[in-house]
Length: 183
Image (tube, rainbow, N blue to C red):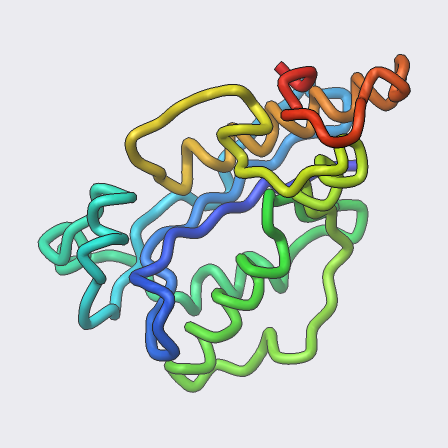
């Protein structure tokens, strides 16, 4: 079995906003092999909100570079996911919805209605701790900005911690406390 840890960065939260960066890391279930499947800014966006530029550090200048891949390449990767592979993200449905939305804006409906086997780490943390917290809070870290490649690596780290905790003693998780026990 393999896991694909995926993360996206977006241009904002408006109806016409798009995916501006995608990272996908493939890791075997025993953590013995780690490969980058995809890690790039995405071409095509017309604007980025000031709040997203501040959060990600990605500017319109970065997004206007020649040779950036389109969202279609991300769609191709997702459609080629091996059958024994599970998608993992901190907010998996959000990431997949935004990829699908962006692809549809450009006329690509190949992901529309497509299902994937996946794990939402936010739901896992919530089930173990009783709290809805950010990825940074779940890991006990503080960051100034977010990039897809770093977040995908953090998804991998959090998933390892959750899997280890579930194998040992999940009774250590106490509801209504900050999940510092994932640290």
